[in-house]
Image (cartoon, rainbow, N blue to C red; front, side, top):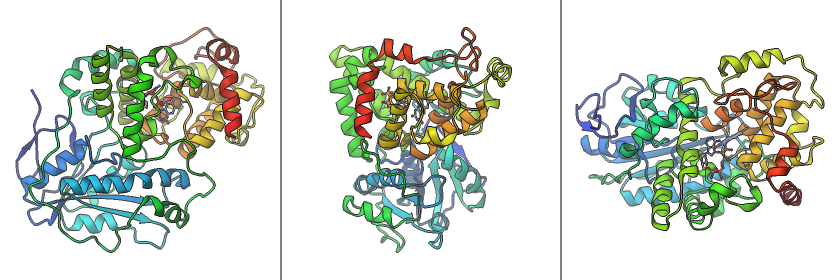
Length: 472
Ligand SMILES: Cc1cc2nc3c(=O)[nH]c(=O)nc-3n(C[C@H](O)[C@H](O)[C@H](O)COP(=O)(O)OP(=O)(O)OC[C@H]3O[C@@H](n4cnc5c(N)ncnc54)[C@H](O)[C@@H]3O)c2cc1C
């Protein structure tokens, strides 16, 4: 049976099962001109539970729906790559929201002297604010700091995960502890989300602070922002909903059937490359899972390996972020892994690199440099090689703490899929999170080790290195 969530003031019941969380005690106001959906983590008009909930709320208070998306110059590591990817999604989001009858305001705050209170201005005229429940980086911070300052109800809705995060009340220990719970709940939650028809169209004119974005205007908009211009747009990924849908179709038609056997082989191009789009919420894990399941059933393919990564591994990371601070620290590791790091903290590291040689892809190891080159150029590293990338930073950093900081810093700055629950959980995986002890060795102790020889044995290292050196 679905659990119904009562709206604070009106008592109307809405079915967004286990996904809604009030962020303050204020009531839904009768006098608002609209319901405001503050789009933070889920930058899409399709398959978005927060948008659906906001639409239901708007209908129930007989008001239109206004969606607001902001992009500021001063979040940590704001740079051309991240700005461009986000801006590339704006025009299509606007088009699709308008088609639904909702309003859309986008505000690009370019520099410190630009107004910094747009959300509050828009909220002041609203009946209620709905936003995304997202457990990491900016949205997590905003959802703690903003709602107490609002005079109307503010509700966060989880549209990131297939199975709502709230159903896992404590931190899960590993994939094997969360998997049976997810498997049990999937029949209920792996279902398409129906669009809610808006009864009242949004007709107010665009406010003067609304920023118009078109494909042609993006380079100029980015150049005009007071951000880090030393990180260029990705050479491989263009942002936006249309591109996310194109990549999903490509994955279904040309890659899914090879995923289980070739996913660890970067040169085989068998992975989905959807993580940047999932990170910015330009596509939802629910839509991807449903499309993959349907395609696999129609073409008699096995999709389990892919769904394990997309749902079990990804939602394990979201569970971790929900119950532990992000980016976190080595203190979040299980007891065996912490004790292990402590036992090996004085082991000699050889070679030993500071942050710069890593960031600039200047180690002695051509494969490692190639993985970092992929990060610098494309803004993402292939999944299997990203494990090698992380394990070698553990091996060659002066301390475990410095290795952790280096990995987080590089991801936050360069990765299109960085600043994500997946980032912080997987960085900790390199130190033993969600894993088990292995045979002991210097520096690593009993945490899992990865060697260049192993990579050569299992994958086409030379092909990958050639490709990345060409890209550089
Ligand atoms: C050190 C390190 C750092 C990482 N940092 C990130 C990060 O910043 N952002 C990020 O999304 N992933 C991260 N990962 C996990 C994984 O490498 C990426 O999710 C994957 O490479 C994304 O590429 P894809 O979309 O082609 O993956 P596919 O293989 O096509 O998988 C589809 C989706 O499943 C999910 N997924 C796949 N592998 C994992 C995994 N190991 N854990 C959790 N979810 C997974 C992702 O959402 C991914 O997009 C990291 C892994 C390591 C070892």
